[in-house]
Image (cartoon, rainbow, N blue to C red):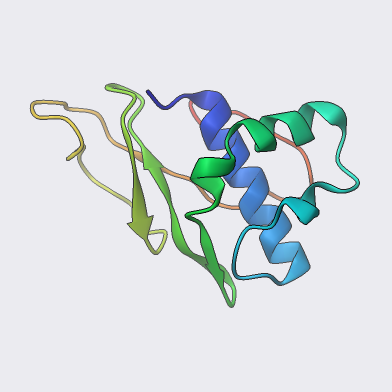
Length: 109
């Protein structure tokens, strides 16, 4: 299941990719982060390897539903109106976007 930490990791990774002007995730981007941030990113490397940053926004990012806790890669960062990840779920998925700077925050709160 997908949770707060996973969304935080994706948001931080997208911000680092944006700031470094890289299209794909690289573990080298963790230099200069504190241990907690670096460890969080390392725990979720499998998800981060699917992200794609293009020009000014995420081309491939993650959408996660706070109700059923399922997630999926999505193309472009468009708003989703209804969960299509679990049959019968009425949740509205959150699309991970790059955060400003190198701080983490919860997207589920």
